[in-house]
Length: 385
Image (cartoon, rainbow, N blue to C red; front, side):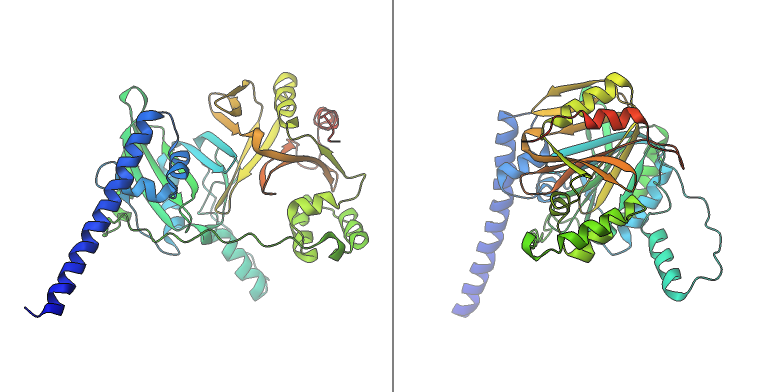
């Protein structure tokens, strides 16, 4: 054999051994960490091991408890559309400092009637909107909004849970390996549906090589001096629907928190970061129906209703109700705002990076004013200095 051929074979063998050792090393490091902190969530373990959650899940679970599912622009939408047949599920959405978990049954969208007279652009927009909701999940117990363009990796996970009960879940991650959304099967009837989804969408290549990309850099915030604040505040006061607010952010090129800081003084009141505790405690005590919005770049999940059990535990301030859990690491909160837009009062909390963690609204009936109890309660939240 020629010398350069022997060298090439030796180099290839060394690379294969190195790759195998690297994978084994991550598994061993994870096992050691889990032995020290058995209750450490996978996401937090991944952060300690300096890998993404998706990489840790794949490396330690493929071939045992984890099945890698297919990828592609339409695959996540199709999996979630099929998941409407799972029946009772626990839907979990999280970001860096908050987790929202809701147990229930997702609603399926009724067949859409043909809408005549729409121009080509409007029809295209309508079709895109319908595709992006996966045929359901609007309102009801499992209330979700998807941004499927940010969904990349999908896995089915089957593993022993508490008391030996097997848990089955579909877990979705973005291109950086961060968790976007997870669905856990909560009924015996859903097991066969889950198994069929896994069989139909199983990736033919069960590899832990995910080629995750570095998280994109957050755009630099435009200097306040570059904002026409007077014009912006006039536009704010002309809002007649709270959903128009995002358009203002785009129009004036502002970050969300910057938009609140520069909002009309009679429309925005800054509150302390820990005001979130009083908001949840008073909502439970006064039995006020609330809406909680929590999400990330891939999904936003919404809870609507009353809450009852709130308490601090595990470094989080929590709602721990039978069908709804909310976990907020409020020690990482940096600011909070009570906001009035188009006659609607909401409260938003941001972390130290200026990222929105969670927002709250009072539940109101269509075409009726928001409950006065919600308005009064938010007005009483502790003001920031």
